[in-house]
Amino acid sequence: MGELCVRSVLVTGANRGIGLGLVQHFLRMPKPPQWIFAGCRDPKGQRAQELRNLASKHPNVIIIPLDVSDPTSIKAAAAKVAEHLGGSGLNLLINNAGIVKQNTLDNETLEDMREIYTTNTIGPLLVGQAFLPLLKKAAQGSPGSGLSCSKAAIVNISSIAGSIECFFGWELIQGASYRISKAALNMLNKCQSLAYKEHGILCVALHPGWVQTELGGAAGHTPPTTVDDSVQGLLKVLSSLSEKETGAFLDWEGKVVPW
Image (cartoon, rainbow, N blue to C red; front, side, top):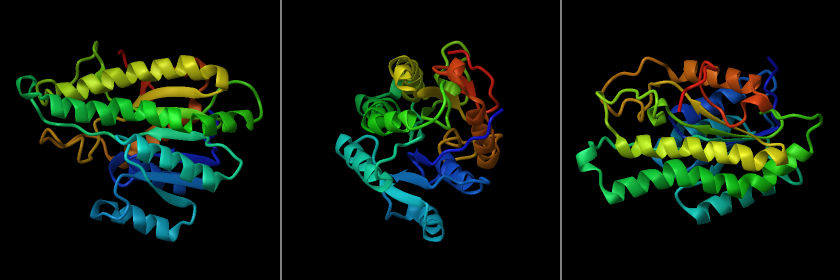
């Protein structure tokens, strides 16, 4: 297994939960990234206080205003990241931002479906498009052949709830709109892997486990996995990936998730 060594990373939804955990663990690496771009919908809000505290102590943490449901915000974020990077590229894009609603199938509405699909599926599509030039630049500037997360990669944080074959937790929470959005995200990941392989960009969908976050606890049950354990597992998986895994759907322990 190789060591994950990236010069620059962008994490969406970085103000809490898994996103914040990723930022914290990148900072703890033996060789932390020179640039950790923390995408956050409301950087000045109360929910971003812990992220702001981190950024005040670590000059390599750059908070980027980024609402993945807003194309204008996405384009502005890409321009801001490019400005910081100068002429270099972005090694790692982690599409982590996501939302869930506790609706039963009978109570799903057009408005909720649209909001969840826009954030969980269309958001990663548009973010991938906007940052593609920077990812290409990173791939072109990295030595060696093959694909890896240290070179250039898009990581889509998905969920086992999006697996059609392994239908997890229906009795706990139906959340059809969330499940549908994650199943679609898995297909987006596959499409990205096919379209971007020629540019040297690895694409993978990862299930982080059932994690003790606000989203993970939406059903009213305490999830079994801590943010720290999940993020440590995710980063270990990322360090081991090569081109044979591009397009795959894996969990935080590196196991293939049927989808």
